[in-house]
Image (tube, rainbow, N blue to C red; front, top):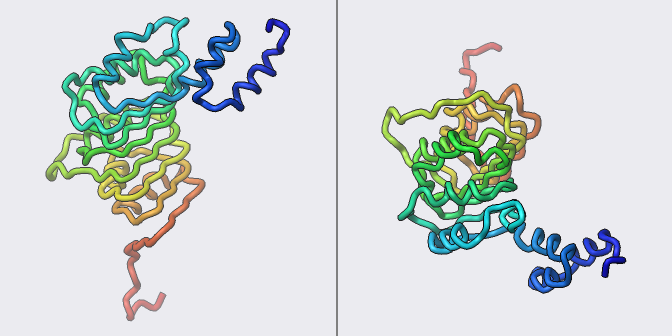
Length: 244
């Protein structure tokens, strides 16, 4: 077994079914590390109970499996009995690059914990499909991630907060590489434009309010625009007496 080149082992592991990776990890040390890296590249939770079990049972040292996790998916958690749990989870995943929240409520404490803590710096991709978030909840989470490059928001309408909602402090940051808005995203355009969040590429497959504000905010950084579906933009028309 020691004579097998590592490249051949990697090729084998790249082509086995995901269900076989745990069995492959029992072959020997080199197989174990690479099998676990592939098996735990993406983890998903749909309850606080499962997240608590992970935090309690999985070692957080460099020899454990937590450093293998690069993608975290949280789905269908409608309320948090322990709001700090997601912060603890993120803190334990030192290699995390992608956070996905599907039909999930943002814990109120999360943006503050990310901004003040030592975690979240590695997250470069954020995918949101939230339960009617408020302006402050959504934008605070987005702006708390200092190295965010890819933002995708779908089926996530922002709830109004009255005429004068609290505005998060806007940090100095580089433009997003890409912003995707898909499905029902009513109010998201205005919220992101109000936060002065700029981007290089914008794609959307449905009409949203605030598209003009978004384009104006990113007029100096936008290099690619992709709009699909029915779009209705109000453009001023010249009067009949206008000779120009």
